[in-house]
Length: 442
Image (cartoon, rainbow, N blue to C red; front, side, top):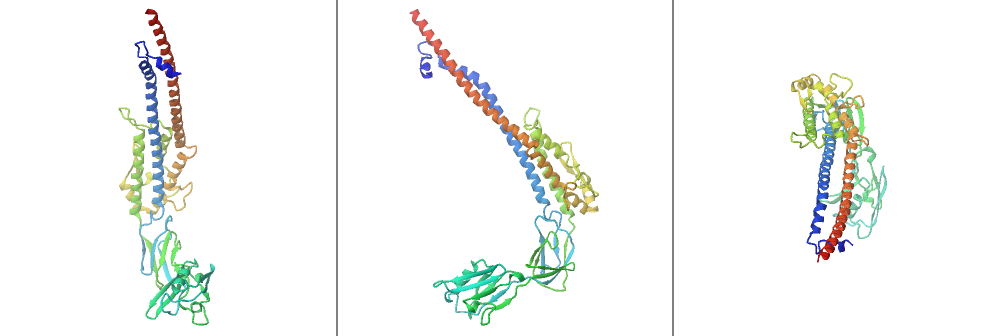
């Protein structure tokens, strides 16, 4: 119907009714459209800024937690006999119990055996079954005609998952089969089956034992300890020890240097990272003289975030000890919320009692009364980002505004279509009346 009406508009009247409709529609629609576009752009920027603020809090908290894990305050570990034992840190654990003495009575070993030589690796053994038995069970290795060489046997053993590795060792006499289990007395294995030259134990030729499966036997501070392997974790809490050779009677000192420099560096890294986060929040909430900036100035969730972070310098991190808050060790809060370090004060407390500072920042046993710096940050983050938290509420509000804008856009389109139809009908009627009037005049 509108097509027929449009054909009437402007026909024979000398009036460009189509242009009038377009102009009137634009005059009605464009101011509202501009408002919606501005609201949409501003709200989109707010959503992005809020997401960035929340992600920055996550990054800051996770980075600090990772920094505190493991060797944050441990300094450098030292073994007085590195040829006998090397030491390292256990990821995610804080070393305790240092210094300590270690004596290695025996290192862990695997059962290892060798066969008599055959011509070469292609030597045909014939079809048959070898059975390897250990604490994990019995494993059958089957050779079939055409795939029954020594090399085939080695491949089959290595693919059996029996916890025994096979290899071929060559010398002037020929090729020998070498079998080796895993470290530890409970990892001993036996070999039986059709290939009698490779059985162990055996009443006949069989395999020759090179080394027996045995546990590592050590003493730490005079306490006898037994382990199935030579890589030992948490015999001393937070420390890994790699046993290299036995030396009964030799005492190995394991120690860590005083980590005052490490603590000072960590405080500096924390303050620098915090200030980056706080500066970004300040920029997002501060309105310039020309009215620019401040996208999140009125956001309740971000204001709560700033307020919570602003209290971190005075927040109690432990409930006892000479130092209980960052402010006690020289960390100051400025008027803009950023932190600074009184180096003279920090150096003094580290010289006086570095262990107390370390325990304040990262308590040995963290709980609600002794959260440490990471615990406080995690608590702030969890409250802000929780299902009913301020940041979640802000995100929900901005998403609702986004939905409302989309609905308003749809309504504007519908209203514009109705208004355009109304204008076309009105001008079509006017054109018809003008045509009739013009006809009566002639």
